[in-house]
Image (cartoon, rainbow, N blue to C red; front, side, top):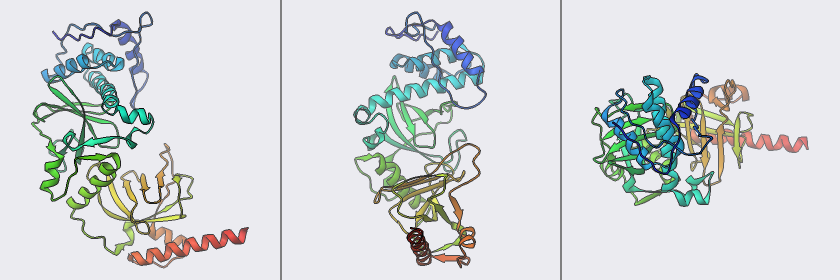
Amino acid sequence: MLKINNSKKKTKKSLALILASFLFASSNIGTYSVYATDFQDDTMINETEFYNPNFSDVTNNILKEIANKTLNKNALSSIDIALSDRDKNTCEYFISQGISSFANEQKKIKYDYAYQKSEYSPYLYEEYNIEDIYIVNNLNRRYFDLPRQLCLLTKLSDFGGYSLFEVHGSEPTYIITDKDGRVLSFSTGYVYKDLSSKKKNMIPLKDFLTYNGLKSKNSYTYFELFEGLTFDVSKRLSFYGCSTDVSKVSDVRVVDANSPMTYKENTIQDYYFLKYECPYLFIEGKNIYADVCNPSAIVTIDEKEELYYHDPKTDTSLCDLMIPGKSISPLIDLAAFARDKNLNVGYYISDNRIKEISKQLETKGKTLEKTAN
């Protein structure tokens, strides 16, 4: 029998199941949260006296240890539902919900100072100790349940004999390991995978960097880690050397900063010219680009043509507005852009020629603005 004991929280399981079943049945796709409340005494489960045979011993024990550690009502409610149900898809969904709720709770505890500074932008104040950062290399896609990328893991909490890590990615994702660093499970907010039979181990970031000839620091800020180190590693492992001064025209994209589909802050140009550099190895499907005229910018474009652009030097930001069903994008192929603007470009183009085009267009725009006034 699996017992979940939490003397601070008690509630009636039946109400949690009814409310969760209603929410689950009312939505076909997407991620959603479960809120189970006992209207008689706003408390949580005292005890669940069963063991779900659909789960491995590892998964059952992980849920038990989370329940013993957490004070989060949504985490306890989701775990209770997962243990009570026998449908595999329902169980996995609520396991992932429980882990996500637990992770959010532990993250706020881990980075309490950052959340005190800013509830909405705590990442601006987070510090990551190198001893808490690990890598799982899945670029060869040996483990199909993990994304094909370098999984960068930052530790959120230890509980029982396990550790909880957040995975750097395009959506909230978590990995649970045992005390020896063996990966046991992978989950998003709606998918749970038991990986306990795969025998995949993490690699300390410090060891990974040393092996690849890169220097490490004792700690990293959010931007140093996710907008600095991950880009350096991606370029190093992609055998990307010094920036070439000549690119294929097909590898250059233009961003119309005045497009209604673009979010922008502190833009100083109407058009930004981006050239492909290499894959971004830490998020599957993303590529690194360079701004020819602003080399300090951090730029990625993913397989869905979604743009992320931030230049810390000028505090300029650009991103593609992610609107469902949209048909317009601020990203334009240079060849099409050149035809529209009556510009002469061939198969290859140099950085100097791109800079000339940029200067010509900006000067023309300013001249037209003065004439209109």
